[in-house]
Amino acid sequence: MPRTCLTTPIYYVNDKPHIGHAYTSLAADVLARWKRLSGHEVFFLTGTDEHGQKVEKAARDAGEEPQAFTDRVSQAFRDLTATMGFSNDAFIRTTEPRHRHACQELWRRLAARGEIYLGGYEGWYAVRDEAFYGPDELTERDGVRYAPSGAPVEWVTEPSYFFRLSAWQERLLEFYEANPGFIAPASRRNEVIAFVKAGLQDLSISRTSFRWGVPVPGDDAHVMYVWLDALTNYITALGWPEEGEAWRFWPADVHFVGKDILRFHAIYWPAFLMAAGLEPPRRVFAHGWWTNEGQKISKSLGNVIDPVELVERFGLDPVRYFLLREVPFGQDGDFSRAGLVNRTNGELADVLGNLANRTLTLIAKNLDGRLPAPAAPGRALGEALSGLPARVGAHLDAQEFHLALEAIFAAARAANVDITEQAPWALRKTDPARMAVVLRQLHDALRVLGTVLQPFMPGTMALMLDQLGVPAGARHLGALDAPLPEGHPIGTPAPLFRKVEA
Ligand code: MSP
Image (cartoon, rainbow, N blue to C red; front, top):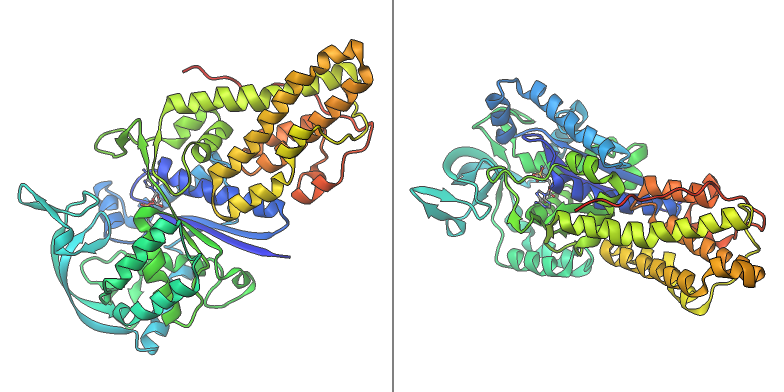
């Protein structure tokens, strides 16, 4: 069986989940579901990033012990997976003993291979980003220096272990060259390559200024730099270093990340892995950022979008659909409620919902709820449907979620044109045999649409396939080649999408 391993970033537990977290995981979820429908064995991983100064500080501010604090906030991310309908196969927390074990083992291997040395670190550090910045990256306002992210930085001096990242510059460039699909989209790849070509410095990978982290093996005064700790989650979750049953999923096929954390995944992570003698992941895809009604999303502006509230208001599947339909994956985009309302009403309810309801109601009323004999579709509809699953699959393999949905909805619109032009309701009296043919063609089209849309809108498409009468075992992509037999009963038609008010 072919295998696919997909990951989301592990989310910081310093705050409750927002739309950005839901978005990265949603993309991974849709691809995971698609791969399962295609017959792949899938390992889809998500989790929480629980160490570091930022979390230590958030716990202190909340008046809690770090472990109790992370237990509580991590649960909110687990709850989010349920709210959003994510189908992750595992959820990792970096405070688990197996993860500490993996981090320490990775460290030992890097040390044994001479990739780590003890030095001293001085630099501008942003606690909020858990990252150091060069002086030229900073801006100054009222005596405070800020990182490009807007986080304030402070001057930090401490002993630190270093990873010999500078020694990996050429090998990284060779790796990117040999693996053109490693960084996507292409514009991001160019950015990363330019950054690496400009020269890499050794990376500080330990801290003595706080305690909430994985202790460095053999030197308890240090805890590991949170990114080394965090990135290791991807292999911990697959059982490394024991390399048991789940290890066969490595290397990961796609690490889904936001553009802000691409550098860590596309430079540090493959360097750590290669330095430890492990294979790098196959691809890192960096998506863009959402603004809210044209404004940057930030806690201080008070415009953070709560995915739970959104789902309660609009329903899960319209939200899932909208997030991947509205903006090309990889680009920044603007979240607007008007946009969500328009797409829900204009595309889901008017195009797809209407098509399903009209077709199924006619079959229920006029054909006793039984399918007529299979019939090839007319030319326009046939073209829109032809090879649709393969086209959707190709788009999803390239993480072009919006293009996959565009192709699916082009076919849905073609079916809508078809039903309007052929007017099966009028054929009932004039040419009932023709009516049966048209309804069968539309039923077949709906079955294809419902099948390929499952990863995007799992709940609603399950209902649609129930109404179409598609048996549970015949909802995978391979089943589309076998038509349902003549006389097969459909389910009970009912509206699939409710229109929402602006
Ligand atoms: N803990 C690190 C990741 C470690 S992975 C080994 C981290 N966590 S995070 O919680 O801050 O962010 C997780 C994801 O949310 C990132 O992929 C980030 O891009 C995404 N988003 C945060 N705000 C966002 C938007 N406004 N829009 C879209 N995604 C955004 O980084």
